Image 1 (cartoon, helix red, strand yellow):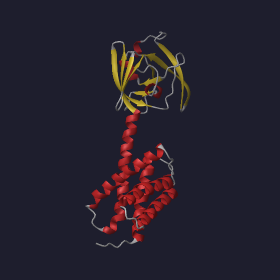
Image 2 (cartoon, rainbow, N blue to C red; image 1 turned 120 degrees about the horizontal axis):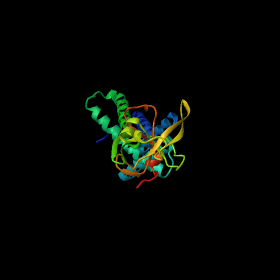
Image 3 (cartoon, rainbow, N blue to C red; image 1 turned 60 degrees about the vertical axis):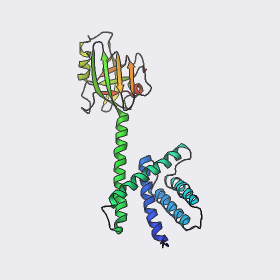
Image 4 (spheres, rainbow, N blue to C red; image 1 turned 180 degrees about the horizontal axis):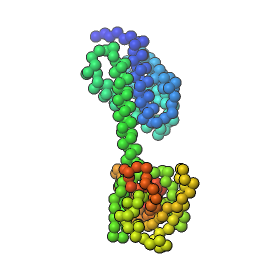
Length: 270
């Protein structure tokens, strides 16, 4: 059986698919490659593919190595400008993740679009859907990294609050140097904070700076234990410090702003 291959059409189709794939990879890696670099990488990949197809290479496994090794490496180096080593391995793996994601979407949509001339529109739609799916996955991963559940214990009382791990919270206690997290007044109420008498050794104040307010003071008290439950791990912190905010936080969806120094290698972790 003999086939006719129009090399110009073959190049155009491969260029378009390589461009879409590199754009998706750029999003997945969150890199700063310009559109000009992506276009150059797609053109290099498509041109090399045409050369390998046209070259009289009798061994199929050699062509397979050239397609999946040389062509992909050139596309990554030219289009994304990724460094050798671990970044290159990561980009190489993500290239195939993006390929399977994009190919699966296009394959699914192709059964509903029978007109061959709409292939370019189909590929573009596939890219938009793949990009949206990746944004959703990335958002869920980021959410799990910045949110956790905290169980707070003080004397005979306890409460559970949804917690935001905020890299902007770098509060430190002036006395001990320990990191300080911020909780809402209603959570402090459940822990018996408002029953602590003024002037008691259990209560002191720290100074803070924030946007729109040059300086302020927050009451700080110590609890017995804090248990943090994240996506996969559990962390227990003994005798952490909590500051009670005088105003409502920006969102009602969480009850504590956790100092990241506590969760990621902070004080008292066991």
